[in-house]
Length: 223
Length: 397
Image (tube, rainbow over all chains, first blue to last red; front, top):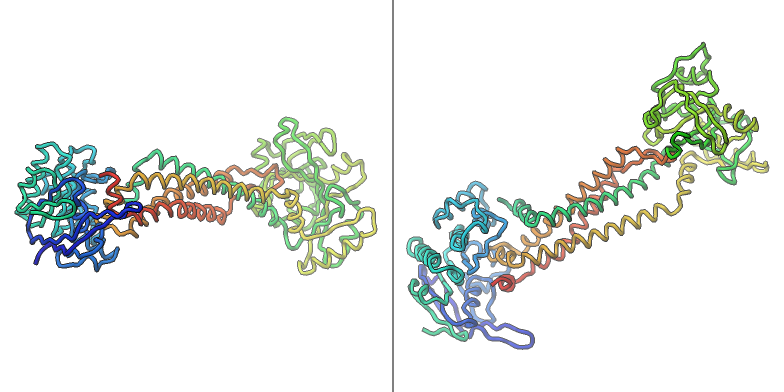
């Protein structure tokens, strides 16, 4: 079974009186355990496609099926619950909550799962150790470097053990060395932990680390 | 970490703003409950009255007196146990004219009638054997034996720094001249509403030295055996003096007190309007704060929703933040008002019982704070809940 199936997806935005077509009848399958890089120029619809797969947005037409669940059949609350269990997000600007420590940021998704506080902390600590930040648990985002912040964000994406990780330009805001470390970590998550990863990137070097690369241009996929 | 600690952490995000908002709610609710306390105190003043007592005064106004001869005519009416008389004195302490307190010239019958409202806690020993009438506290022996003696409230004694046995001289205003009084007994109120800042002295002393024996009486207090007969007796008394020079108006002591309170006119209405204006002002402050907090965190709400937080959870989180600030301020302000106002013991110079803020007023204050929290938090909470993730995340990226 494919981890992600996209069937004839169209996405049209209404901007004032004009309709803007961002995705034009895209169909796609990503196998379980695959690591796919999604490339394309700005405005080609990469982030929109990522948002549709993550259930952050809904397609104008077509269907998105992730881990066997058709997202069009899920209502708001169900979709939120599904997202908490099945998808991990990694953003370009990390999007950590500044008033929470590293371990508290990682604990956030676990607040949605019935679990004791002790168990939550244990899992969050394990996730942070996995990304190499076992000694930065009580640090606030402002006390961390960009690379470390992104690693906390990856730990947050991992902590609820989702099947699919969606990364939107995860190295876009990092220097080359930190970017390389993050890519190594993402590759490790794919190879060692079998996570299905879809990574949006502009960087051909980053795309080379993926098992497949897809190109999106003007809302249409091309090989 | 749990949901509640997440809310608290968010409140600590901008500590200065949170504390300032909390303080503004605290001050507003302090003011609201203090104004409510004035209304409570006015209500309390009405409660001084007893159902078993009637008060007879001049029908024209309280400031016009009645002749002493009425006492004997009233006393013989069936159902009247005893009659006391009482005159407002209105003198000031020449050493401290601003430190005003109430003084009344009363006859001996006054103390047995009010025995249930006050108790004597200190008294000078009598110089010689004095026959204390039946039903009267033996501690009044020294007071009864001396024409210039007086009985003062415990709080008045403390406030003025007086001592038992001390002679104090007051300057008369209605009855001019210097008036020496010797403190022969100290009373404590059995009912809070009775107050402890009043001086009682012999009406005879006032009559002989202030009225040159004309024997005018301010009010008569009628002690009844059966409160059920109060209405009939009031009519009988007034009918008896209907065609005299000083027609009377007799009413229950509670109604008398209520009439006294009504002399404050529209003050209760004005206080309520001010209270509501304060609440409205603080509602705007709290709403503005919550909107600012919402706008600063739009992308964070997007992140939380991305992680799986449902709209309802985000709604509750924002509302809880508003409620904690306003409820915290409400609790501090309302309880602070109760403690500060009741602790001050202020009683408008004995005109009113000591100022108090009823628990019902405190509860109203906290309820108002809750309402302010709900209203001020509702719009940002609703907006945060309705926020589309994609739009929220776009604010940063």
